[in-house]
Amino acid sequence: MDPAPLIKTFGAERARRTILALQTSVEEIGAITQREGIDAHYVPGGLLSVAIGDHQLPGLAATLATYQRLGLGEGNRLLNAAEARARVNVEGIAGALRTEAGASIHPGNLVRGLARAVERLGGTIYEQTAVEGVEPGTSPRLVTATGSVRARKALIVAAEAYLPGLPRFRRHVLPMSSMIVLTNPLPAEVWDEIGWEGHESLSSQSHLKNYLTRTADGRILYGSRGAPYTYGSTTPDVT
Image 1 (cartoon, rainbow, N blue to C red):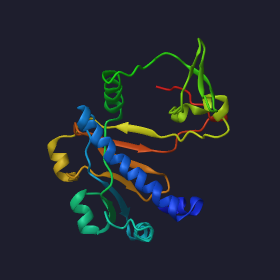
Image 2: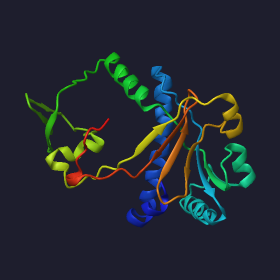
Image 3: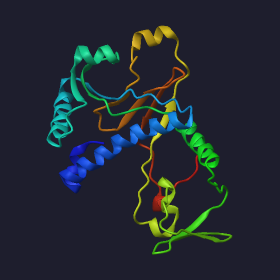
């Protein structure tokens, strides 16, 4: 996450704490996958934000300066064109910002592995039980079509983009859409040309946010924002 908007909205200290929490969560996910034996293709390759052309270099330098101002300069380094190209052979690359705190993962394998771990440790997962409402308070509860579940202390409403489907959250959450395509596995000679041996998670400085990952089975995953937003923050299930 770019620290500058965080500082502008929440102040420097909250921005610093947020970034540290994000970085810690990456390490925690890796530790959990190892501890629970989850084959989630976790690769701590870091992040690489590339500049395509010299005109994009000042933006990377400004981001690094902001990290340094927050006391988070360690683990972030600017690469020149040759250093960046040695990591991934992008046409027109002029440099990059390398961040160590980052990793790639297979999210489907992760969530299924976590579900198996929860059940193995004695937890119960109730599927096909739609939550129709959330009631906060000293004894919060979830309301379903067939009954309700009350918590002793707190509820974690981890519905992400589906939260606007609940009346209480409809005016408070805006789902962020992202579209993803995945290549077929690429042959070895193509990878020899591309490089990318460090498996860094890539992004660029284009106005349309994009991200790329080298998968464990030799594909390239490309994602970008640009999907349409629907009225009322609805989330239609489209295949």
